[in-house]
Image (cartoon, rainbow over all chains, first blue to last red; front, side):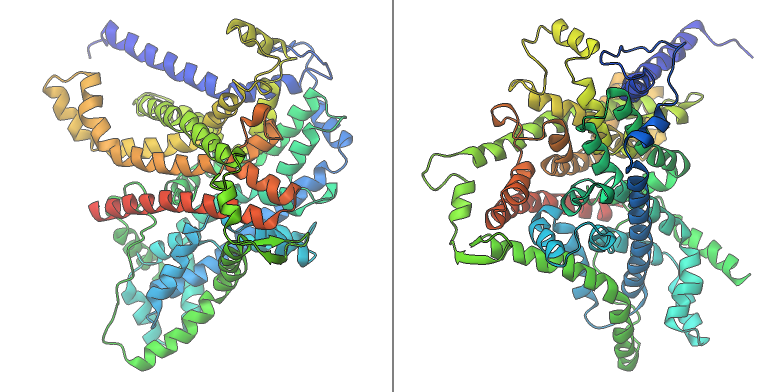
Length: 277
Length: 335
């Protein structure tokens, strides 16, 4: 085996240099936040912390300083999990009807669901806000959750997947006396785990990261979600630079972990889900 | 045991090359099994309605009815509770578009600000993402770690990113002061200066949207058949020629798609404006449409007027979505 020519090695080294430089620039805001978080309650933090004097206790201090911090995390998880579960149910049911059943008016419903993708949230925000206020749903889980329990994107994603499962299977199952609902529950759903996983990761991430809607429908501090909470915390008097950054890091952790663990699902969802920014 | 044989079939059915965005087909439903009796179809209708009922109820309550209500409200003056009290004709629309002859053009300016913001975010954002994606196609050890890093901002919420960037832009920090002095910016903070506030928010937005743009660009690059490169390389083409004559033309559909999607999301940007600036900005230079909409209904309780802004925004976004659906359709047929 011939040794690799010098120019080749140089090229590879240059490539790594470029990749590392790009990665460093991209991650800079995250290094920045970690650096500031660990520097203690100083008013003039420097870019690079003193590595002999790192204040790891800051993450605990954040919880002590902002009494509702734990509650915000709880709220975000409750809302994101219920929305994710709700969408999995409503979307698979609707997608099943569109993909497998053959009924009059199917095209009408198809375009009705497609229509929801054409209506951006701005176009409905004022009446939705008024609805929640009039129902007395401000500062409640139902106000944070209900509007997101169905998704046109989810329906189309699952419909598409259901349609790849051979139709003969459905016909055979029905002839064998398998009910429609049982077919969905015991055959279609288990077979569609990849698509359901994609929808779940995508929905959880989007819901956890919501800002606008929780900002509108929550007033009291204990009903905030992490995203609204962290921005409110930023402008509060007790929050020094280190606490702001520590709080932000805590808030970002769940989705960063989700990215590492569920990257494939997430990428699949995003390349498909690009339909709706 | 029955399920496993089924699983094989399902994978075979899925086996055809899956390019970008084919996971969601918007092609209309084709009638299946025409031989089925009417009796069956009527039976299916009942079940179908039952299965679709939960989704339909949610959409009716939170999408369709509110949508028409928005249009209705935009023609009325409303009271504090959002009930219409007086028919207002199209006055709110003429006010937003500055056609009422009053010369008060802050809402027209807001539309222009939104367009300016979009131009600052979209082309550079896509260019950087494509550059990163080209880098990330390199076949070297550990490339997947770099890919994960380049994807990472997709998991970071705009709210958290805004809190971090608010500090990066904070002029009391030595580093920021240093950068301000380096570029000789005569300013007390980039977010407080009318000349730099909008570009600063745009720069931060490019960062937050980079992960998503990178994923799409990389998927587009990976869909290009490798043989094309191999055969051109044999013919003696260099790296730049390969990029110009193979990558760029074959990536055009992806780029068009990214362009539309990024434009739509730039038009919808709100969080970063509310966290970084929290008002209309210096000389109203960051008062984008969604922020004007927010101020109108949430701060001023002017529900009718806010609805008019929302409808104008909807029309703009609808045009963009229709362009996008056309592109998407073509792509699906192409495959």
